[in-house]
Length: 362
Image (cartoon, rainbow, N blue to C red):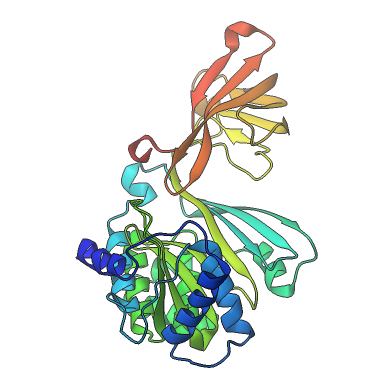
């Protein structure tokens, strides 16, 4: 069914363009007005939505007064079906973890956030630049819904109540849920069903570039926002006006990571190399060249000698140099280090660990 819907979406925009001329941009604006059922001059919201659409996708289909070949409801239902087929972290390994990186900006200030969810626990790393509006500043407080409350919402009705009760409306709340760390693939399908049933969704754009993932933009005029999804996977990749007026949210990466992963906006302070416990911990890490092909840190290693056995062992401390290398891509645009070298004063103790993306989904 998903392939059939995507074929109809493609029919709305069969010819890709890499750049828009001034004339094409004006035509795109007129198309947006027709899609939203208006023949009026665009207000501030609609102009911002048009700019957001053009920033994410390259062509707005000109559909005149004819209905789109595929409707927004078709697209959202396809995205829901596709998302249900995506693996959860625990499906690929009981100690695996989910990873999400997003960037929110209003053009003058930016908030970048990384989330990791493992074992029912959330880790968040946030960095910002510029003078933050109240909406952007609130992102540092973390998700508005606790992981326990999210996990307990296992039906469409429960997710609808959670979305509406937290964010005020089903449409806005459903989009926030799709950006929430810890949302399972089955929950994602139900959230898309709720969003499709909320009404007010209008197809604005189908990006037909020949790539496997074709971005489709939907406008919710009543909420003064637009959002872009990949119907082939169900990934929400962009939203404009969701966090606040003029705020653009971009999902930069999502992935399933193995038990040990080296992440962080400026590098982690600690890495537990023993996976499920802290029998091998490197800590107090001070990084240089983080984000480059190879990054290095100095710090300390605490290693359990497990004598006579680990539960009664002694933690030994060593000064170490830690090097991360071999960036690899997995999931949606995630690019993470795949190897950690730990160097000791005694070279005989040197070790290398495979880390990063879960092998099953690399």
